[in-house]
Image (cartoon, rainbow, N blue to C red; front, side):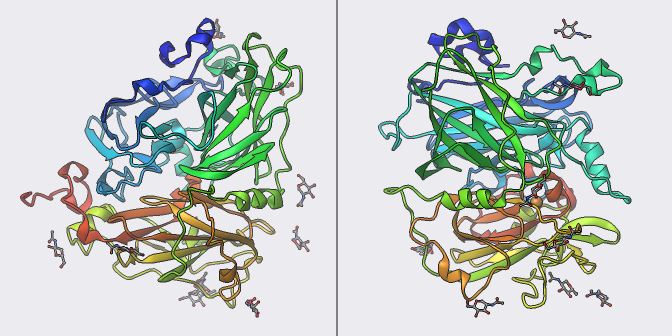
Length: 577
Ligand SMILES: *[C@@H]1O[C@H](CO)[C@@H](O)[C@H](O)[C@H]1NC(C)=O
Ligand SMILES: *[C@@H]1O[C@H](CO)[C@@H](O)[C@H](O)[C@H]1NC(C)=O
Ligand SMILES: *[C@@H]1O[C@H](CO)[C@@H](O)[C@H](O)[C@H]1NC(C)=O
Ligand SMILES: *[C@@H]1O[C@H](CO)[C@@H](O)[C@H](O)[C@H]1NC(C)=O
Ligand SMILES: *[C@@H]1O[C@H](CO)[C@@H](O)[C@H](O)[C@H]1NC(C)=O
Ligand SMILES: *[C@@H]1O[C@H](CO)[C@@H](O)[C@H](O)[C@H]1NC(C)=O
Ligand SMILES: *[C@@H]1O[C@H](CO)[C@@H](O)[C@H](O)[C@H]1NC(C)=O
Ligand SMILES: *[C@@H]1O[C@H](CO)[C@@H](O)[C@H](O)[C@H]1NC(C)=O
Ligand SMILES: *[C@@H]1O[C@H](CO)[C@@H](O)[C@H](O)[C@H]1NC(C)=O
Ligand SMILES: [Cu+2]
């Protein structure tokens, strides 16, 4: 799965167990342009022992890690070898300043790449940190199309914390049904939900219990593809773990048995360090944590991930924290933890609030905003179909990508009316089972005044099920935002705004909206382009849980013709300057 050279010499005798990039050599970081040639294919894979078709990049899922240095230009030549499906890849957390057409969001910033065709993504990684990439067309991300991006600091600049080794951990949940089958269920009457995932994966490895199948033919418990990931540590050393989650549905709790973890980075921003036993991580988030190998070295320990916020029906995801020189696959002598109570919203909210920008690295927000948009998150029915909506509007993006439609003045490509900045605050009861029969499908967008300061208040509510409200991890493209506050219940315009953290708010690109709660964000609309803002739960996004922001479209440079070829751009052949 990985080139053995990426395993540090000390561990050479365990080459067979070095499954992911596990060491970063700073001395190799010199070149300023990094070229990647990627081929996207369907291949049979057994990441949790069950064999199914997965989408791979150059034969792998998770795909290759992009390792770069701040300021480098990344060029990815993406060849779509899927026989019957389009594809697009989003570079999650990369702001695409000056290159909004490389954001990789099918239907928003580009026409998806058709089978047999190639697209060149070119962008600058302008900020050090831990990021990810993933499919952003249909529901392909959960078919295995995802990976990690690591951006190192410029030469001569050091991190405000120290560690001996750097390791990647990418988390996912895994379904046995194909993403097409899932998408079809979501858009059918009767509705068929994707349900809870069959497995949780750590660095692309999980374990499904093959005995649960009546015909286990496709499931082989001894397939090496599903041996647990092993993280080998040297006693006394400190490890920086770069942890990212790209789950389709699940919020996770990450834990290393018996070891404290110190959170130091989130979505590329330094965090005022704090110590936890378990890290909550939502789809689309990344963290760096420091872990010291300071426990009894005569045994191994479990690394566990457990589902939180939904009643778990998926076994704990396991990897092995292996003290050198113990045998890497020697199972720890203990029973793996099942994690915190799945419905302990209080402790998840507390951890969200605990994330603060690190002293000395605080980029303070403007003290006031020019505009506040409150987005009520509801589950709805539209013409009998289940949808998610924001202020009564459920997004169905047009066949002509927004970026192209706006830049080329194709005003009939989507509804030019603005969506509402709020909802009926006074009479909407967020605890009542929503009927929301009057939601509509819409492709309207928010147009932001360039360089204005915008607040977004995400308001959660009851779903269409009694006493149920879900966690929604919201992700903004093209930006990082300040996280000004979280609260439970209904956001109060006059009192809650006064409690915002304007002193040391963390800047992130993905943030949870907790059940029945609200989350307030602020960002500056200073990146010319068109940017999706959406729930990172794959099925929710597919069911319309997204909005679109346009800012400074007139400042966007000429669009490459390679992103065109769909919708109204099919016959688009205006001579290019
Ligand atoms: C796997 O499933 C079988 C059949 O239900 C059950 O007997 C067994 O205990 C399960 N094994 C594990 C490790 O959960
Ligand atoms: C399961 O995988 C192992 C290891 O690859 C192989 O030796 C064995 O034949 C496989 N079993 C079946 C039933 O395919
Ligand atoms: C959490 O869920 C468990 C069942 O899984 C239930 O017994 C408990 O009462 C719930 N706690 C809260 C605070 O809802
Ligand atoms: C689109 O409209 C703007 C504002 O009217 C104008 O400046 C621009 O040249 C137009 N672009 C195209 C491609 O027609
Ligand atoms: C949705 O629209 C209906 C009527 O058009 C209205 O009563 C309701 O309050 C709206 N809901 C929201 C969340 O704005
Ligand atoms: C939904 O819209 C219809 C038609 O516009 C209207 O008659 C009805 O009262 C609305 N229902 C609600 C709950 O607002
Ligand atoms: C954007 O706004 C900031 C202050 O909010 C100001 O410092 C900056 O000059 C503005 N930039 C542009 C291009 O208007
Ligand atoms: C929903 O929650 C309310 C308030 O906590 C409680 O009174 C009611 O019994 C619950 N209903 C169900 C169906 O659980
Ligand atoms: C909002 O907060 C203010 C001040 O605490 C309070 O007077 C007002 O009743 C609250 N509004 C609502 C709708 O709860
Ligand atoms: Cu959601």
